[in-house]
Image (cartoon, rainbow, N blue to C red; front, side, top):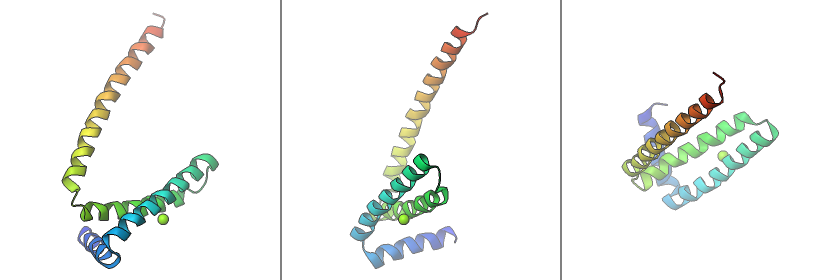
Length: 106
Ligand SMILES: [Mg+2]
């Protein structure tokens, strides 16, 4: 399905089921994803089920973005959080490299 058809389907789903229902449905799907991830990490099986639950969550997250008209705000949070994470990783990797070098006998 192309992006235009996907967006149309999100909008139709919101109109058909209602905004409140879709927000509560996201909570249900988040719980299903959490259970699938626990099962996969603890028991080592069910990877395909994790993928399916990720798809369910992503479909509903797209709808929540539309319902709340949140795209610019969410994208802004994602950018700033990823930039902070990147700076932290740079710092952690620098200190890790410094530690590794101090352990090397020269
Ligand atoms: Mg599900």
